[in-house]
Length: 221
Image (cartoon, rainbow, N blue to C red):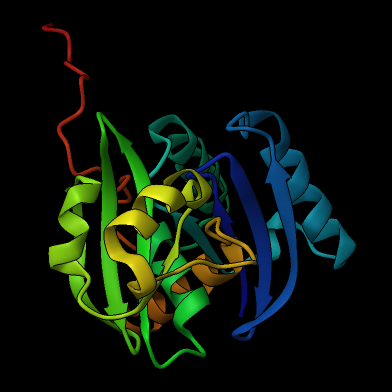
């Protein structure tokens, strides 16, 4: 099966082409959250490079964040548009889970994901040996010492900004990556393929991961 995955949850997005459970190609969108201008051309270029057309994609997968609410909406709208147009299934996958999968796949230790939630808070989750021990939640950094009791690798799009404070709070318990810290469509796609295989169909509803109520209020008719 051919799957096309995309993630636009942060300032660095990506699009990935997968075939039969393996990554074929991936493109990065380093657009500082202006994904809408490059997303569709990148999807087109990625498919053309492999001699494919959108109608040949059997599964569309999109990253659900958390992250940039507008960016995630752009990704969902694009993936949903292709899936509906060609009658293909669409599934969503958590961008945080994709980061944990990427950095925890070959690790026996803990992986902590930190994403800016604004208002002086962060989205946080913790996995140990591939199993979630602290589900996605919104916290302040001051809560980390109680949540992270063993050495953990900290990843996330803004991790360099948070690194001094995390290191101060956790000392030697905090490790930091030297490679990618942004959610990658390649791993979003892998999670989406697993989800599709487990449920045997696409998602009925695809919505951003957002743990706070939005400010959107529907106008009265």
